[in-house]
Length: 135
Image (tube, rainbow, N blue to C red; front, side, top):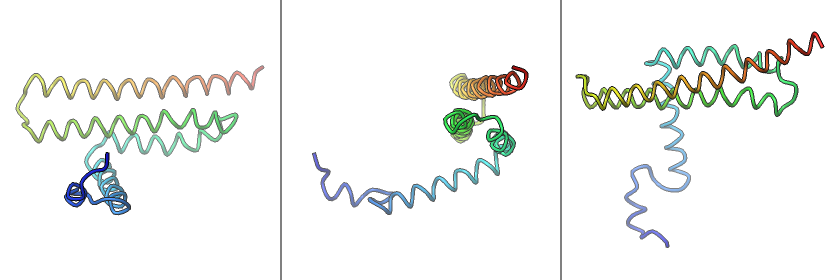
């Protein structure tokens, strides 16, 4: 079913290509804000500066390289969501509330899981690379 014309006109971020441009601008602002305000995000970006070149050394194929790189991107995604939840929770109120604490703790747990995934994938890749030298 097609949306009525008035609904499309009232879209705050526009429609069509203008919406894509606006969404891209918002994403860039989000990356900048995360890098400026979140030390964990900065650390993870710097970690990527080490992991990306290392991935070319460890990878045995393009598929293997992708399998090394995707967990890093997953970590950045989860960290951005964690930071967004923290910012929104702080916006609502900085005083302690059990639900705010729970939201922040769950988001932090998600980051931990993403770090575990990244660590496991990279540990296996390093093990296979080292094992390959001695086989």
